[in-house]
Image 1 (cartoon, rainbow, N blue to C red):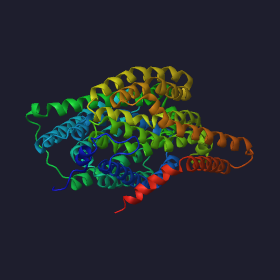
Image 2: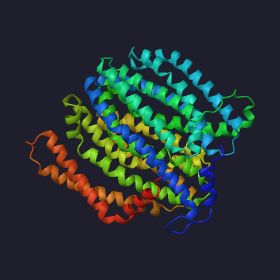
Image 3: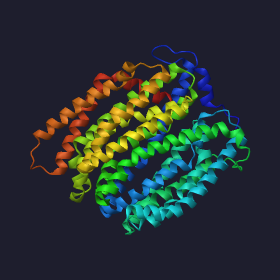
Image 4: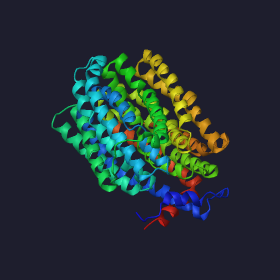
Length: 508
């Protein structure tokens, strides 16, 4: 209370069109908020990431593909309701900056009622899901996991308010605590032989901890959701967001459902671990940017020039990191799986390789839906997501006739050909950006990644097959990393220097 809202100040400050290169001096306040948000979020996540990766590798060795398959089946159902459970109210609070304290309290009460209802629904649906997959153990897994609906409901208001206030530092500490609790809990339970329960109780423990931290950090009262007409616009916006999220979740997890149903739990375990590794660039890099950008896009939602600038810079920045990471994972997939997970995970190599290639473009596409929502086009985002849902699952089912590799190939073909253009065309229309401008943002990372891939292949072909797997893996990674870093520094030294100067200027 009594503090200046940095988002509102920056939004009003940059309404004047900037020059072709830089924003006006006043507009740099939002730049600093964006970079601070990414820096704090990234520092928090990467501080726990090494521990998380080490824990994941240990847990994977202690558990079996069937354990991962069981939890993957339950996650298909639980994950869907998590998106519905929030009702899109958090995003509505971030986008609608004219909501009163009383309206926010009633939106929080509505979310809590929905969370309680979904717990009851899940307890009833657990048996049906277990029968669908012919796995009785799913009943207990779903019953325990459904507690996440209550914790998610209790996070709606405090998380949305912190995001709208651009309080990314506090959000970073909360998310880091959740990741740490999740990692430690899952590792301990796996070591003590609890099997798949380690994968169930670890995330639940982390979510309970983060819920407590959020409500202490940004407390806000919750009220009974009376007089719904006064919050009808926010509910409508939330409904459109929820429909889009459900549709996205459906097509994003349709591959898991089809693999589990058609090919069985062992195939799902191998495909799932391949998906997890392949999606690291999306989940660990893109996700930390996406956690910041909705508030930034919302702050400049009426300024097309500023929207173009942020979309271009964020796309270019993400591609610099995620393109080489995704393609690199594809190139060293076999060595990594055998070295890190063991011979019994060999079935994951081919789907991992294909899914990693798909992840390159999927790493920049998550910028587009938040831009549509933040600029008041949630309905358009919903319509395009539903259309994607009508296309991809059919491709996954057709690909399942060729095993997990066929399903992964559907991602490689389906996403860039059918899904990505739907959202890109809408974003370009809203911002007024031309396609050639967007393509130029991707071009630097694309050509440098191509050169890096060629270097890795040359090293692979020149490495004797008698060398140990670890040596071959290390040689290829070092060669690819050195080539890409050299190209980046040689071609874009000025941009790196400008970013470093910005980060130094933000100290204190």
